[in-house]
Image (cartoon, rainbow, N blue to C red; front, side):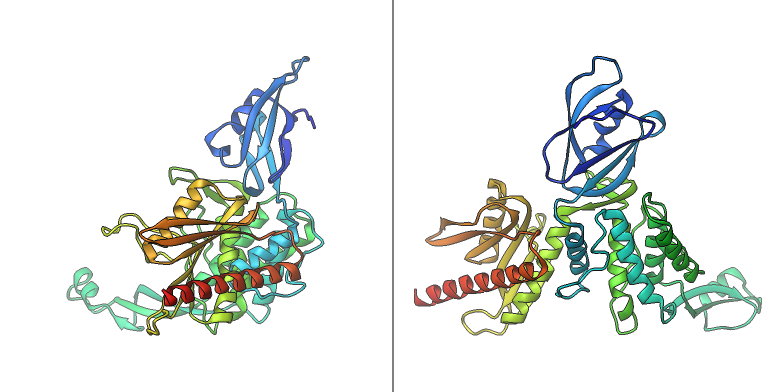
Length: 426
């Protein structure tokens, strides 16, 4: 496929597909070879056009999906990357990864919408509408103020410091019952973020504007600032699904470079490797806990490689079970690391081997979204560490995907039981 540049070149790529050829102006080529675009696309020259309309380049999408505008003026490019799995399946992964969705045959609205950004916008709008239907959630916020009368508690040190010898006004602290709480800030920020995206139909934009109006008096998050934190409780239960999607939308407004810097984007991007890791840890952890009890810890950050605690271990899931000697204290039993790529590399095996040795577990499980399944045995200190490679195909229909997660949990528990029995015999 070859296209020619326009005032705003729209480049449509699909995650995981091969190279496609595009004709770009020098400015557009510079934009797509910049540091900002390095995590989004691969680019290489494909020869020169004879008529001088631009140079031809081959482009290939990386593991981010969504839409973003890069560059400005004559160099502007509208880049859209479609996920390699169906959009409704991706929305299901996103919803489940927030921890607030359940397995079902029709878990996600907007299933008939084939473009990612409108589908995400519709899913969030549906969830936010349901959350706000009974009314905007109110909460208490501690406020420090200067008032002509006592309200709440007097801040005596501040009063003496600022107005020594004066009776009024008073420096006070009180709890204000207000809609300006973390939950509403996230909903407002996500609604505003979606309103700034191209490609949303007028009906959806109207619904998003109504959400913004409902949240009058709420402070929207500042672009690039850390997101407001909230805690799940009985009072905000109806907000849970909408909040999970809101966080994903707001995080999709930027991405991280290799040196840790955050890049704000004019659009919405989702990191597929992060979606896969979060989904797998949540879904598999839930199934392991249902079958065997114990405690599932996604993104467990309690373990270090060294005694000085400088090198943090970062497995995607550790499942804790009672030890084989009958002790009460739960110990690491199953270690899982997700790899959103075709198979696993040598470095992945080294990493999992380090997890197993450091945590004293005899087997580790690498789960990729494609590739082949196998087992590797590594001798160490008179015993054997077994590294298993599994595959979860994300394009499977919902029921088959659920069955695959259940099957994988069963396999891991069986391997654990066999290992424990062999250890007991020896």
